[in-house]
Image (cartoon, rainbow, N blue to C red):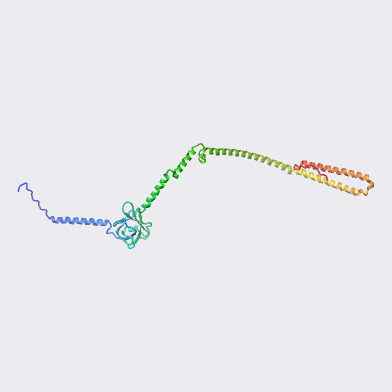
Length: 333
């Protein structure tokens, strides 16, 4: 045997046994991994059944999760078509996660623009009775794609409204032009007044009218002050007249005294006239003493005339003191 020729390899002892052990170890490792995966996915965990009835199960597949607050609490095990024409979705819920599902829980099927459908559970009262095993609940749909036509129509109407609003003859543009005109007028001489009335001439007329009104008010104020002074003087005059006419020692008291004197003089005149009547009645019986009677008549007439003169003087004095009488004549009887 030369050095260039290879040496025969020595046989490995128990090759078959070692290969068999390696194969068994590999299979055991695969079984252990598979069992761990099944255990991790809850295959061996005790579950309860939940049945959801939906009008359309599009996007839902076996193995999809039922989530609560973003965490999976169940898994879809079977999907079939029920006799009522609805989709029957059977879900296995682990006992440990069943505490989040109550009789008052609400289940929704949501399908977005991107991605598959999502089954979600909502529980408002966690103190409610637990959801029983085999419970059947209806599913509320929240399909975003169903709302796309209405959303597109709304956006289209919005765009059309915006186009009408931004047109040259639109109400918005006319309103902006009016606002610009109003702003320009407000920057003029009379400011806001010009903007309200439309021109500086009209604003000037209003200001002039206000000035004239102020002058009239000033005149009225002066007249009111004069009337107040006149009223004060009139009150003083009336008080003085009242004191002179109705006060102690006034015209009324003097008039009363004069009236009393006139009444006394009239009484004297009545007595004189009565005596004259008596004398005239007795004149027929004493005709022969005519001269004596004539003398008595002349004396009586002189007495009556004296009484009448006194009455006339008293009446003149009354007219002089009484300010409201203007008839100074005296009518003799």
